[in-house]
Image (spheres, rainbow, N blue to C red):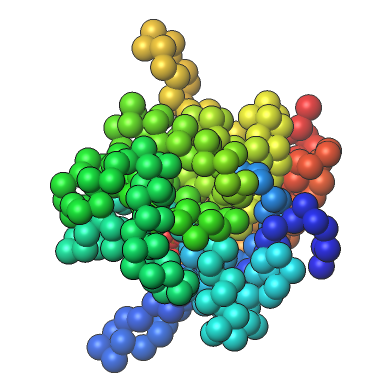
Length: 329
Ligand SMILES: Nc1ncnc2c1ncn2[C@@H]1O[C@H](COP(=O)(O)OP(=O)(O)OP(=O)(O)O)[C@@H](O)[C@H]1O
Ligand SMILES: [Mg+2]
């Protein structure tokens, strides 16, 4: 275990398998290996972006780190405290420091609760503040996310998507957490609104010394937000490094495909789109050896048999690929 003051969260061999039931007796026939052995360190005050195609396990990692879903195996250590064997009371205490903002602001806020109650709820659960004190804190917090006092007495449906996401952010920061999982927080929003929310998140990060795990499939957003990037494929991290290294020297063939697919804003510039060939394999039955070998142009015999582990390329840049020496130039 790394005991380093720069480390906020340490994730060791994390696994989350979901049972798949089928047949008339709904027996468990197989397991979706949503997260399949992830080791990751999240440093204090960084924004670590987690990217990958739909279904690769990004949300599951986020939820499992917070123990909103119990891991199947492995452990999560937050500021030196192991969440995995914490008691209910300890977990409750640790949760104050860790929050989440979900992708869809239309479904993540309780439709029949007033904004003051939605945003004030964590204070009600975790503190002994009086209702007047809670109201004051809610007002202050709403102001810090660009909303006003009058908004406290409205319901979620009276707000736009961007405003709803501000409400969700207010609820996430009201307990002054250290860590927030941002699960595609702007992907349901218009581009102009998206930029404002991203700016707000960056400002709050500075003001409150926050650490973010920023889940997204949008590499333009990664470029704007992230310090480091972890690339995920079928439940595993395949490449990890500083954003600049990942963008200037993408090394895993999967990362290269993702980067090649970033849209270019110039309509006259036609970029050749390289998409990974073939279908995304079944996460309940991932390919043997390297999980990407079925879609990879660099695949050799070894890739079909031996699972690659993350290897250090240079500095903080890691990749899980048998062919990285040929690719990395
Ligand atoms: N509660 C659940 N029960 C069963 N399977 C699940 C459950 N949650 C997720 N899965 C499966 O686990 C895999 C990973 O899902 P996850 O939601 O973590 O992916 P994701 O990377 O967040 O995708 P997206 O980009 O679409 O949000 C998928 O195959 C999904 O179908
Ligand atoms: Mg998701």
